[in-house]
Length: 365
Image (cartoon, rainbow, N blue to C red):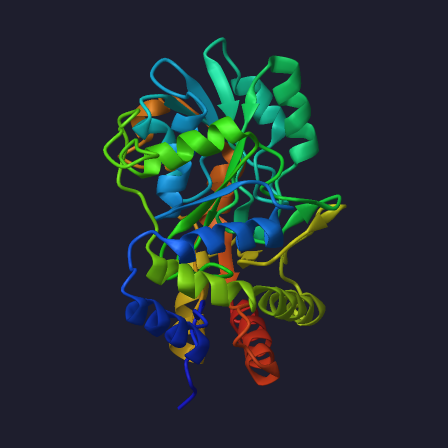
């Protein structure tokens, strides 16, 4: 029987286990020196040294980042609907209103023209998502933000190492969040990193993650417990040493799929974009769900459908979007499938994926 090829496969090795053991032996398990080192190393690695704050999840990072920028009740933040719910949730959790805009059908990221049409006098910020590892059109969005005097903030959860015209994602906005969930391009087991454009935003992030304290028992603001532990930071520090090689392998795998898949709407990379392929996402216009089932049951190949229900139609967020029509978002939600592209794949795995996809498409799923 064929061995199953999963859609994602976290890479955890002996080095990560040794790092966790080292922290356990030290007796310093809560936020401590490992977190501080991880913050500096992550900043130097991905965002040119921009100040970075570690938190316990990507969602916490978005929530605290918005609060640190002063977003709250009465404000509107424009976000994509075609993304994980954490993007819209984080806005709603501040008391602000998420306003959903449509996506570009090529990159799956925010369409600047749809964003502009959604701007109102209450709009305070635009939050693009660098979806699947492809950077959003930050040049156009920066121009929009400047013309309308809006903040630009980034959901870079899936985009570690991505860039646009040589500028790393995570360095465009007032803040940016990178997720460290196990299936991301690198992980700390769980966690997030928030990069900040100013010392003031960074300081507020640090207060908010730690019950509003910079010094013990001197609570300055009402805050949260959103700290990262040294255990998680130790894993992340090891992963930082490996992530570039993993990203290169993801890009190599994507190139193989690009070259060998025929008759498939494979990913297109925008001019000047450096795609890090958190996901390798194709479109299946006819019977997407049958295609996914056939790959799994007939060929033992996993895949992912991200995201089948747009945020503006979720029961939790639909109340913010009465009457909203996002045709490109709806089409993507019906058609997208993410094929395995992770760095654990070998040549034989890739050949199997190509053969299986070709067979299923010819059979009409």
